[in-house]
Image (cartoon, rainbow, N blue to C red; front, side):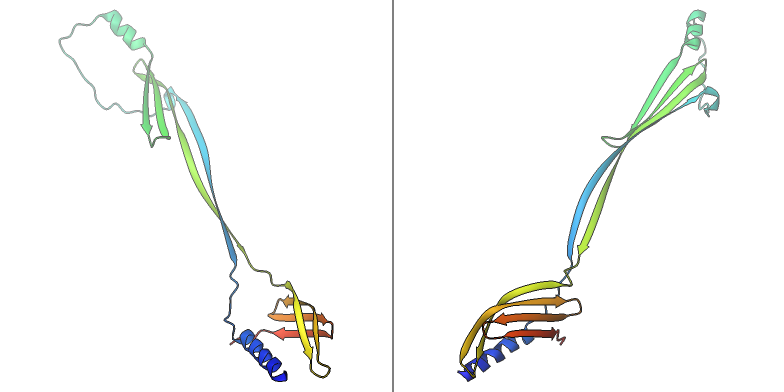
Length: 181
């Protein structure tokens, strides 16, 4: 009987010592969040502060015009709009107000959508301190008694293990250190 218990203890120690190392990697939690920010920009300027350049002048000869039509056309206020699309949701526009061959006012603005993707990564390291509980069994050779009980093991921060155990036969206290191969 003694040889069987000794063989079981040797096998248990070999299993514990030769067990492959398992590194506890940190748990990584990644969250993706997309925020959409809409900006509308509108600005307006009055006539004298607007820079302009005459690009071309057209002269028509031999045409007869009515003076009233020319004066009404000269004094009329015209509004010109131009829009530039950036994509399906964003655009820029310019609006000019012209009368008497002068720019009276210019407005420009835009509708912009800015998408921002925020990636938040959280790393959670495994606990450095842990508590385990388990079941114990022992056999006393001198009086041939088998014991049964419970035990606690405390994992310490610096690769140590502290154990407390109590069976029907005895009490035990132990400390273990990690073996690095």
